[in-house]
Image 1 (cartoon, rainbow, N blue to C red):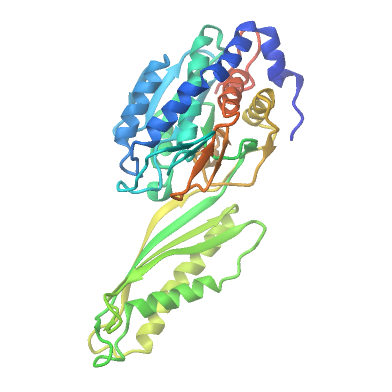
Image 2 (image 1 turned 90 degrees about the vertical axis):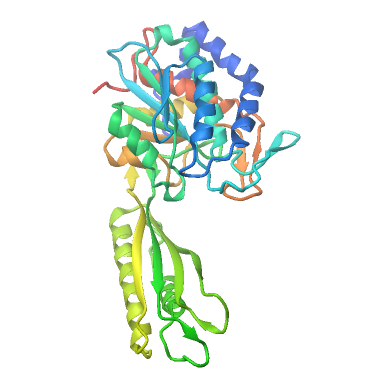
Length: 411
């Protein structure tokens, strides 16, 4: 962990201002209420591109804790403000509203002692609950804030959402630093963003009878050739670069030549140049696979063609370890009793501001989560209050409070 400077000391801030210590303690007291909110939000289905019902519920909750001027935009992004000194810096804090689960998924939460089980209970409904709890505490001390905290939730973080929610907020709002609350590891601070490129590839061919028309090109065989070429690629371990053919489906029966095949590819790297190189190789392999299938086939009934559509283009990003928002987050997490460490790179909403030159980190929401993106997802509420406590202290250090100067500089 980076050294915490005297000016960054969150414990000293609480010693200096009793009202801060009081609100810090109150976060633990009211945590059961926000766990209930977390459950309520989880049980509202919220697939990417269909977050509006959960957005409306979160907007009401945000308003209830006293955040002013809270509104939802057309996409479903929710944003309000906790206004302090208007001449001071602005900090944006959000969690994401969408999940990877479709609308038909049973999202009922099943309590099991301190553990809550249900799809989305951690990713990212814990983040949403932590944002609400931190917002309540910040509202209580807003009169002496040295800057303004914009706070809410965004859509479009998962999969094909392409981080469109936070990108839209950045297009319409100005702020000096950003915190996204996400993840189920209580001590992990993310300061580097893994870039991501994804494709949907549609292969189409003439089809035919597997025996009578043997020799015609197959859309499925072309996709299989492409898959084989991709999985044989060599990629570096450092910077970490990965690929995945996550979906491959097509055809109607074993006695029919495949007339269509659908393929979905995910490419990621912490290095932009490596990601671009991997992207170029995958596109070349896919085109060559179709060419090979056609060259080896009878084209009298037609050839296999393909359409490759990019669905995600998330930039890489990196935050200097000495940046004010990193210092504030490390100090805030330590002040809440965590043992903060700078974790491995990840793809989060922080990628977008980092790629645009705005300070950004991803903080945990408290508690421990496992099996994210699966039907067996669970969240352990033990000491979960530490997440919103850390966010509360981080925000105060970032924008300043009372006579304590902000770590952020207002641009």
